[in-house]
Image 1: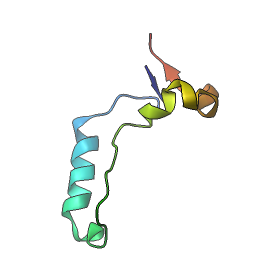
Image 2: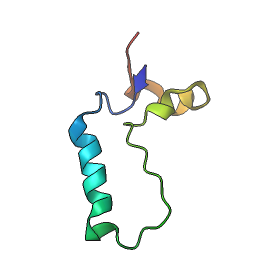
Image 3: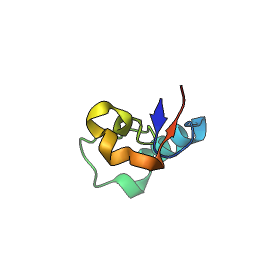
Image 4: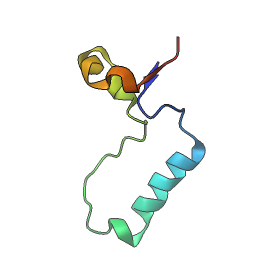
Length: 59
């Protein structure tokens, strides 16, 4: 598994995203999907060149 932010996600990471969307700071945002994954999808083969050396690989 490759995660560009070099760490696993925590419950607090999810809670922060939920709190943001529940706050007035997101009042002008409509119809968005926020992926809280630390960039995990960047580790897929089609993005491998972009991830490069900055990712941690856990086998």
